[in-house]
Length: 165
Image (cartoon, rainbow, N blue to C red; front, side, top):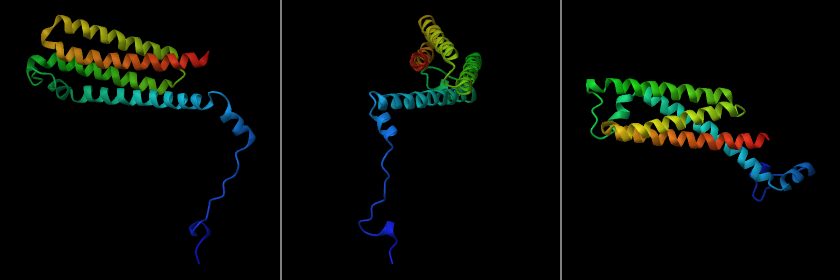
């Protein structure tokens, strides 16, 4: 004997959607709003997780991060100060990522401040790259990472703020 779901040609019964469900799905922009909300949640969480991972890498393995910069010897004693700065930057990223997760999507003001901090950091690294040839590659790379965090943060929080109006 074969059970009903295993029998050839068996179709699982599906109930019809309620009229309110049909009306909600048929409303103009309904699927766009649902998609945008999901993307915003995933974007915010993904961004915070990337920031936490980046911060953990900078804090836990500054030599490995500095090793990718050409002409740098992260094991050189003179580079100790640079490693300390990289660790401090990693700690900032960890704190900022944890704050983004803890405060949640409704903390628009905090998100704007975070994006402004990232933008200011990016500009400071551009200035350092312009003035210090030895640190140009490291500073340029860090400027690009900070700019990416600033741009993604500004976009996410701006989207969130416009939905609250």
